[in-house]
Amino acid sequence: MTRLTPKHRKQIRAASYTIKGFAQRFIGIPLYPYQLEAAKAIVHSVFMRDGMTFVIIFCRQSGKDETLAILFLFLMTRFIEWGIDIVCAHPTFKPQTINAMERLKKRGGNYGRRLTRTAGYIMRLGQARICYFSTEPNASQVGATADRLLVMNEAQDITLGVYYKRFAPMAASGNATKVFSGTSWTSGTLLAREKRLTLEAEKKDGVKRVFLVDCNQVDKMNKYYLQHVANETLKLGRNHPFIRSQYFCEEIDAQVGMFNAVRRALMQGDEPGQSAPEGGRAYAFLLDAAGQDEARMSSDENAL
Figure 1 (cartoon, helix red, strand yellow):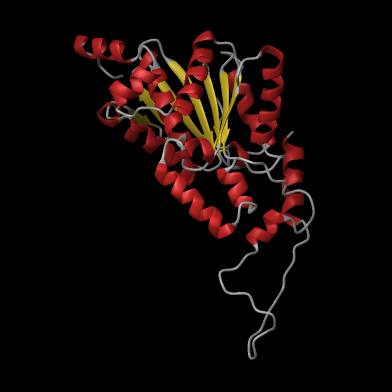
Figure 2 (cartoon, one colour):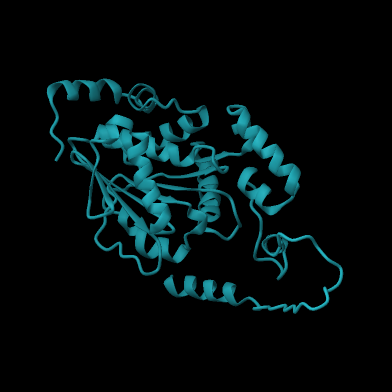
């Protein structure tokens, strides 16, 4: 357990009143308005223990993971003596889960050095801890509890069956706040499903639960991001599935038709197109008709 001197206790109290002040004064990273809006809503829910569900959909490289890291550090600071159990899940252990743990220490700066890592997947600060898990089929998450906060990061790549069978029960004992974060992909993902459900909840009580930030909002804060998106859009086209989903946060449907826009994009090669075979070269066209899709659908149904 981390030992705290009276001086350290005073510093922590002064810096931990709000997540905005914590990020600026203690971590040295001022949050963008859209990051702060989402973080404040989640913090309020955690303290109220109201079990609300939030969805964070930020376009690529716009600060989603940074927001989560600072949110975790803030909550660990506030619960350093009382104790808090947070669970954060990613689709893979290597590299996503490992990167998330390293990002937590890095974002903490000098403060991050007080974090200790145990059992390879638990980050501690005093009595507060975060358990990092992967959602891979062979991963073990038995016995974990999220008494205040459960985060499913990159939820567009996490199957519904894995979430409902292995992770959803972790939030039960403490009525934990749940966060689904990631980047838009298709309408059939866990992230898209939770977005639809939380939007319905918003209509009933007017409490904002979905925080969607596309490149237009980020462009106002970061001129370099604006230039990057403009270049990528010029190169690939505004209707390219990667541009639509990764930067404009628009869902694309990969389930309709065998050769839809998503699959056609994945089939694009790096070499210039040609209208006829070249002499002396062999060509093969191989097709697995829906093999991957059928395997995934079967896996999800069995898990449920």
